[in-house]
Image 1 (cartoon, helix red, strand yellow):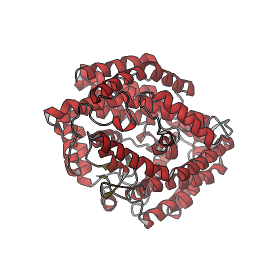
Image 2: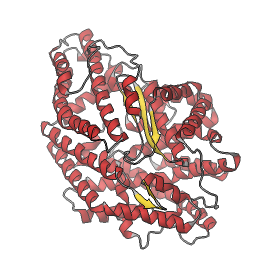
Image 3: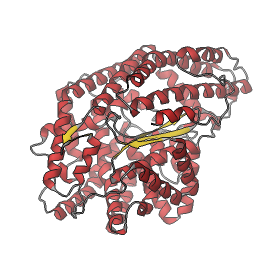
Image 4: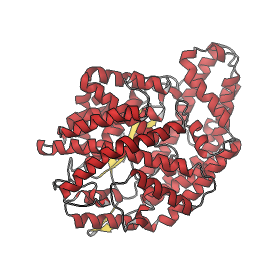
Length: 573
């Protein structure tokens, strides 16, 4: 169990401000250090720069404490001690920290030496700090505690979801395997079983989301915004794009992506011998081959991905092997484990941790390649002394991960014999086309939700169906309307990370550009990729894209040639 190995990780970066023997268990443990920072002299450039390093060191220790609490709680949602520790952090630690962090931000702003700092070095940092000062409201601290509790409740609901099927109790992740079976009646039964089970929680999930929406609307009003969308755009520091740019992407999906998706689904329906595709027909191999089985236990998943990473780049492969040796991977699906997958950085030891729910399907390989890209981002930027710059904007973080899926794609022969290889690669590239509309679906839905203050659940349900049908026109949900109405309940980002989804679309477009660069000059493209990751968040978003060899744009002008390149790749397969 990885929760034990977290305690034995090597500490390569010595503490200088935080006492070396300090173990953080509560806010009281760090309060004296925070007070020292508040009282420190920052009147000269040298003192201010040292103060920033001391602050980074302390907040890295605090951030790692929070990450460990979060990781344990997702690794085992049934453990009462883990839940207690998580709720204690949410209720008693974080609310006390936020006002102090706000005062420290003001101290930086008010320092007479701030203007002497290197403008190129600190411009992104300074912009972020000033933005946080402007957005902070004392009354929102309590609301964020309540918000975290509701988000945790969603994780508990999802983590407890199981289905009795084919004589066994199975998680939704394990049920996904049946949707790959060539027996259409079996796929139908499996899809209905999990859909009916999710419907049992529909009222509870709807009510929970309603509470989240009301709470978020209140936070936005407290901060002086007309709606939560505008508030969250600022909070997520979307300085380089606007809601209108998101709408331009939605239109690009309408005009460019949906026709390509239609061609893919027409081929699928023809090969399956169907007049219309149903939801349970979208994952099975259309030529009737059995489900791809890339591995039969997670150790083989680790070994195969290690070889892929080494083929992409020896340095990256070595970093992954180091993670394996340190026990920084929790990959197997099991009952009581939170759903989904993520990479979390332990900020003080500056090491990444990967969490996922592998069940032996092709998607598990892609997930580990994806999360591996995030992990490499954390590793390549770990020498950065400022904590703020060891993390990048989400839009670029996802370039790191999605690029790794594409860069690793030529080496899927580590998992598949020749007869399955083309199929696996075709599934992957078709998946890119299929996901581009889904990104638009979730993003457009959130734009509606958070710009219609005070809407009720019925109105929200109607809006969901309209958005879903706009971007998902090729599968037939006739007679399945009750399931269609709650399809969004499965998207955890809506509950735990509001407005974190368009990033995937932006990043996919960036990653496709990295991929095309690699097809022309692989060595140069990977060098650019690694350099861009090493920058962390020290540059504005467009500059990070440029460093990786990509344009920061997600209009039809960028989308069209990239979709055409994917279709060309599909034509070869």
